[in-house]
Length: 178
Image (cartoon, rainbow, N blue to C red; front, side, top):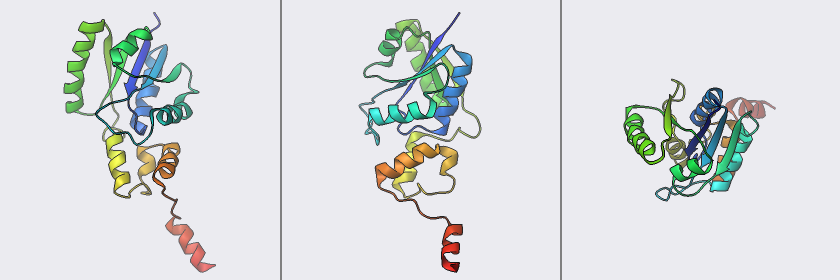
């Protein structure tokens, strides 16, 4: 029986952890809808449409993945899409505790199952909040950022924050020798 899953979040910005959950969900369900929401308690760096556009560029061409914006309660959106499952990425015990409560509410309110996908070792510590904090502290040009977020997101952050790309140490040395 085909199943449609919704992976909802703010994705501000999309991270390697988000992409890992999307790709794994795609293998489990006949369709995965990446639902980009608005959280009134958060002040986003990227607009909702910018986040949708980034995700479409990152995963929109993958088979059985759709990316859409939504406003309002996630459960209302899930019902409107006639989805069977909500997918949640779990990084740690705090995530699990919070998501278990929400999963129980979702089951009671909408008879929708929640499937937890645990993050891999390489993505367990990544969060959009962490990425924004690193950027605020000037760490966007860190050599390790490409392990946390895709190059497309790094470029979008550079444009959004007005950060120009710094030449690497190797390039600077060559420039001095010439």
